[in-house]
Length: 312
Image (cartoon, rainbow, N blue to C red; front, side):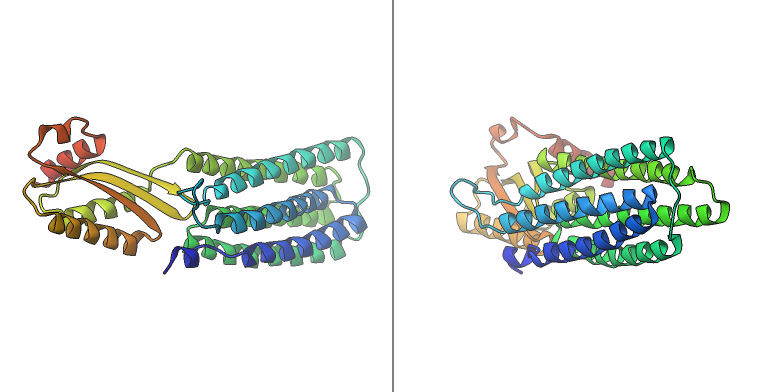
């Protein structure tokens, strides 16, 4: 599979736009006939979904651009900006919800046509649930944080809609007017939390966070499988969108032929490519007999030696 095939296409953003438009229409129409601030809070998040979907469309198109002279490592990192932007929009929507809820506490209104409104809101929640599950599966396939952010945003929307539905049902039973703005505030808290989670994920991506432990173990085992003496150090890893970057120093006998050394590194690169695609691997070869090869021994090497002693 090529790197281009590993990238998500703009069709996912189009799906987001269509679903966001449909749910926005349903929720705002439900708010219009019911005057429920709880439904309004849910509709406000759908408005954010449309803005975020436009950002996702731009992001997917830009990230698909091949590496060039000014961006030798590609353009995938824009996905982290997109998910951070979406998280910020979510928090702003939540603050809007809080404002409207406080206004409704101070100026209560009679809720109307709740049964019809509930039907529309339930339909909107069903659309979001189906699209979010589809996007979450796609995000895992493409290792795309922007698709994951959109999927989790929609899942948060489903849960907030569920809270609104429960609250409106309770209102129908109890006829307590303060339940509606209270539900809106609860929705806002949940939305703020999901927004901060997206921003945190973006921060880690932009700061070149290392690969997860399970992938680090795959790298270690692959190197040990092919390296003649099983010795390496200065292992560094990072993400850039779906692409992984790995570089390390491989220590080999100084008298080994260039052809054999190249064959070893080639096998390591190919195996890592098959297990962690897409990945860029950089291997710096050093003679194991030369003390200067160990002058800047990294923490990864010390951890490796400690693990080897435990196994013995």
